[in-house]
Length: 264
Length: 271
Image (cartoon, rainbow over all chains, first blue to last red; front, side, top):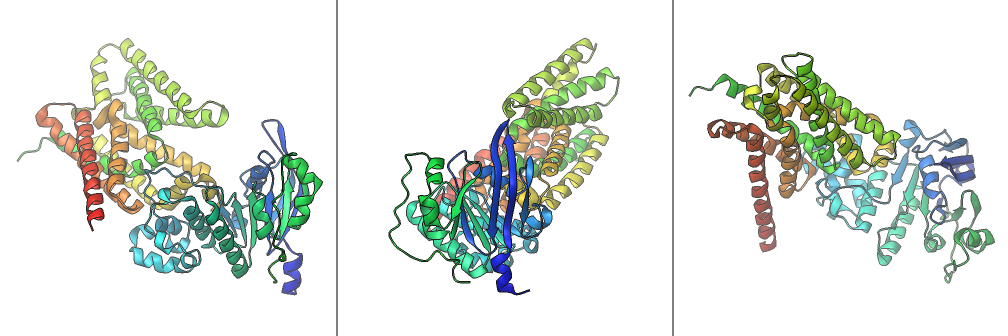
């Protein structure tokens, strides 16, 4: 099959009529979602819109009441498919009493470096070299993970998920703990990874301003997908205003530039 | 020099269980499970009392089984009810201590046993206990090393562990079972009240000095070995129960580790 044709047509994420109730409340009320492979998209919604629940369904952490999730053209999230995916959580639950270093954190997730405990650090570094350089975390390798800043931790988490060469990368509120200048750098970095590795990137966020610059397509969630399309279309849609409430003022888009899928 | 056989048994048991508690303790402290360890230790009292009530000469088996039962109950209640972790554990801790005390006071001639289980007694360590400690050291120690990466990832983020293909639920149950058996066995040496010190102090002291998880694990193993072995050796000439001796030795090591970490920092700043 023609690869270009496939990359245009095949879906990395397909969600059909997904319903989830939590504690009796309908959180997802028939979500339909199709994300084309190779795109960098944003899934946005206000707090309580079901973003986290949808993300948990995509990761196989939450069983839907009805409806289906199909990932990477294969099926629902199971061990085989999860191996082809990367997940970047908002933060870790790490206690400062746990002295896990960045090097060790990266090593524990990779079969190649599974025996890190018995090996000298130099050998581990050689095996991690590529992804570590790509995400610019070389200087952090000796630092304890619990002591990293928000931005440093995000880079380490992405680095860690890239080690397994994912085809689909899911990021949960990726800049929640990052300062404003760090945020811009962070999205540049993600965009760069997306371009170089040609994977599908899904940014899940309540932050509207970032989607203008970085996502080629936006899905707005509020129990259902209330609107989807190119960022500027979605931001001006009446349904989005309703979802976010009347006080919402969209970010002003001042610099016209392309929102295509980076010219693949 | 002659070593009394009871002393040999106690020292060997301490040398087997000290490093194991230090190792498992790294994950117990990082996963905020110190109170869990305390709860299953206190549950052992009811197990001991039940053992005597059943007329068993050695209550080790009912002690371990009852602790496992309470550990299971904690997990079950946590999954099935809206109760907070703390509440569940406080409930089961006090409940099993009360049950144990009632049974022991109903039995004639077992009042004296209470002290030895509350504070530890090297005289109560038999050859079978030493052998069991060795078996537990080898099995639990190997499982911990085998599952080291999965445990570290579970400690860092349970959802991330799930997405990485780790059977989070089973790993959690397995860890709890290993911890419970290790803690219950260590009661002979430290007593119910103080046993958690051997699980908590070595990793805490190791954390003051270590710069990586590997160093923390190795140091914690070592400090557990020194603390448990040293405490038992001290308890005999001082004619004190072994539990307080081990705990105070560990506390001394902890203070040294604090001093050490200050010196480390000072020399770093100087260079």
